[in-house]
Structures are given as structure tokens and as C-alpha cells.
Image (cartoon, rainbow, N blue to C red):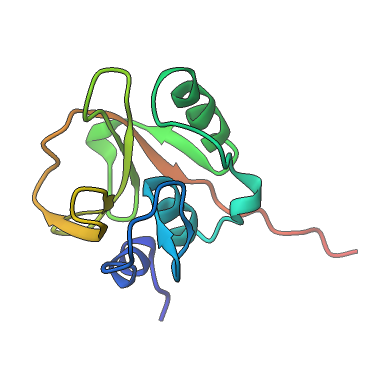
Length: 136
């Protein structure tokens, strides 16, 4: 049985929130949650950033390495939601069958929130298919 991104995200619920956190044991922020969920080595992602201003554009551009942007009406379970909780600010979450999983700074942990996000959706990202290596 294959475990999908939404199931992996649900398994991270309860992890501690930590700004710029990249490790499930010490804490995750929303980018750390996406990296852990999609098994992306955090050394390949920005480590000193804010999810606003010029950092926002750089993070979204870097996401193109692992994700492709899709139409919001084509979103499916396991996709990454890029939400706008405030002007010029983003927050990332993983779409689940009943809501979304995200790192909630206010609650201090990763949570699953039922229903649709209250924030506008700026983009939906879907993991690019992993390329198979050419056997030689």
C-alpha cells in the first residue's frame, strides 16, 4: 500500500511549531511541513527567509524545482496550498480529504483544520513526478 502526501501530512499533526523549523523532532514551520511531507531534503531549500515580500517570490520560484503550479479548481488531496493570510504574505498547507494540514504558529503545532481555508488561495502546487534514473 502506498502512503500519499495527505496521509504523511496527517501523521505530522501534533508536531511542534518552530519558525524556520525543518525537523519533525524539534519543530516545523509551514515550509518545513511541506519539505517533510514531500521528503525533500531541507538542505536544498531556503533556510533564512520570511514568507513575505521579496522572499515570497524567491520561495515560489524555488518550489518549481519540485512542484508544478496547477489550476485551483483541479486541486486534489495531497497538493500544496499556497494561501495569503495577509497582503504580500503566504502560508503553505497540504490539502486533505476533509480540510488541510498546516503549521499553526498561534496554536504552536501542526494541525489539521477541517473545511476550506479562510484565506485566499494564491496557488496550488502538485509534486512533479520523480524522474527515474537511466540504468547504464
